[in-house]
Image 1 (spheres, rainbow, N blue to C red):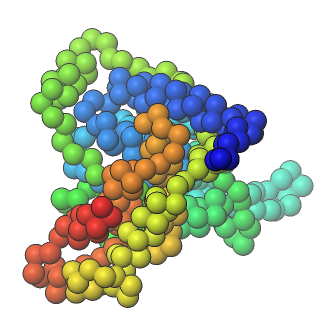
Image 2 (tube, one colour):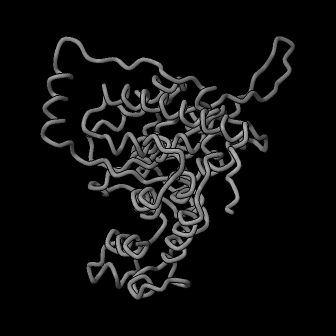
Image 3 (cartoon, rainbow, N blue to C red):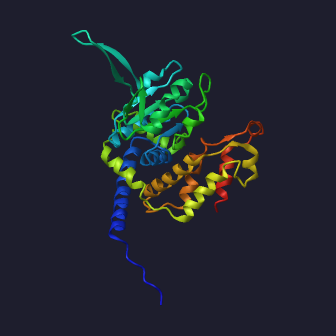
Length: 336
């Protein structure tokens, strides 16, 4: 006689109900963004995945594809305070973090007062981040990881939630500085922004060149987003998905790889932060798709956005014309 399955606990039932309700709200968020941003469904999805995971995203695409508009729309729809910084070669760390100024009161007493920079917001757009010097780029390292900045030996906490959405032009590289590997690793996903297809570009032309344009409306609040970020971490992950994530990430390291192409062509591979990012991102993608748990399809779909900025080809591999995308595709194919 087989044992009967015990009914799910009340706590489990409540969590499942919260996940389903959040999935409905996020689909509304996604639809509202799509009213303004045309032909970028995958970009919208992956950006929302990043925000649901509490992370930062690197948007890579040529100018004019709506990257700035996407950040502005996200700020409105999600109820976040958004600021924009145009990165240039002469930008200084104080232009981002803020600085101390010397004040003098009526009695002649002098004291330093901290003037916060644009980083003190909830959604920071770092436009053309690779145009700033390494010193200025490094000013964001502590903010992106610890959600605080240190100025004049004093630490200042950033508003929560805090997300950096950075843009990068992949074509015009003159006068740019490559992002340090430590900073690249702090971006949860690297999202490629492609050209829209014909139908989407036609719809965009009709919608954006008329007398009136669609304006986004708030759908979620700050509290709602933070609650969603906490709930994402409670979505269950099956053993097969966990094993696939570990196999994929560890298989991308030359030291532990079983693929000959990885051992020959990869200079350095993804660290543990890649596995953490993939685990969280798979949960968020499942939720956006209306599912209660992630699958191997989520691992495959998110492998490139998670890994491509956390791996580097060797000099000889680049000389031979090897592409990192092909190596990642081979790793995904081995998952079955």
